[in-house]
Image (cartoon, rainbow, N blue to C red):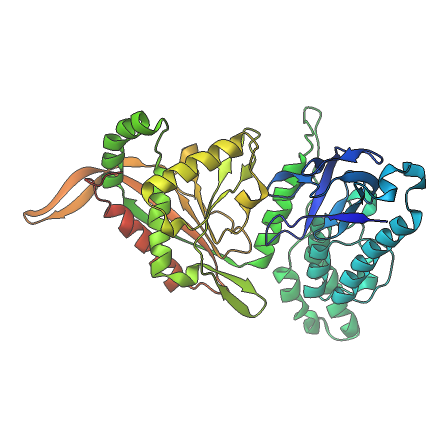
Length: 442
């Protein structure tokens, strides 16, 4: 009997799990090569999972709404031409199906063992187990944490809330051993309370308030943002750049470019070119952290945050940005932005980013303090371009002129990027912007 196990694909280096949104095939349905079997979602993108082989779906190992670790089997397909492919579903290879389910359970058990001793039968995603291991939470304690996920599973938000509340819960234990001591001896316990993260306050409701449930993507984004702040100590630096040359050049080039190429040229590819140049000057901004190791990235892959019609954000990635000219960057930016708005990004389009750029100026903001897109260590925000009076140095002395000014902000992981590196990198980006050649061709 010939069978194939369809596994949960890896949707990015920082993605450890995905949620099954919808099964497009039922047990017993025939499947062609590259035909979609199910739809999945992560905090970055929704995607379809096709079958690389033709056959018949004989077993779905998870239900809609389940959170499944990457590389775990999610379905069993009887290959085309095999004995089970033509057999009724009710009689389809019960032994092999049972073995496949046991393999899934075994992989989950191995993940538990890697994090902490097994003390119960609940399912935990690899990310939850990772957080538990980092925070020294035993499996016995993990079993007591109430879960808000499907079938009572513990989500990232649940375990992070437990970690936050653990500090306040431990304060009484510090003073418990000195009950009979003088009152002054209890004072050392106070810093532990003041340094801990307080529990989330209860939210009161009035008659006119409306409760709006977060959509699935917003929940995943929220978890990812909390995880990033929990992982990296964020520091933000700012500079103001004179981008008059960029504005003048674009005003001259945009009509010619649109007539020739049939599409618009925005400031985004211009910003990306300057960022890629600065990364080559300061390669230690293009790194990731793995425990006590720093991974220095060879490729410069720049993600650009794009707003979706729903109000959510997604970050498609321009691979090898330092090897593209301005025309190539413009084509890539427009293509990714259009497909992002149409929800047609492929999994590869949002993977492999090493640095992220977000344009808060598109919303009329002069500056922002963005949250790092893990596992990267830095993200840069560009503010709105405003006309301002500025002092210019000339051979005839200083003069005041109207210039196009813009704030740049860089949030970076202070574990590996100090103020000198972060500030120098950001200033170098501003220098490249200010030195833009107004006579260049595209």
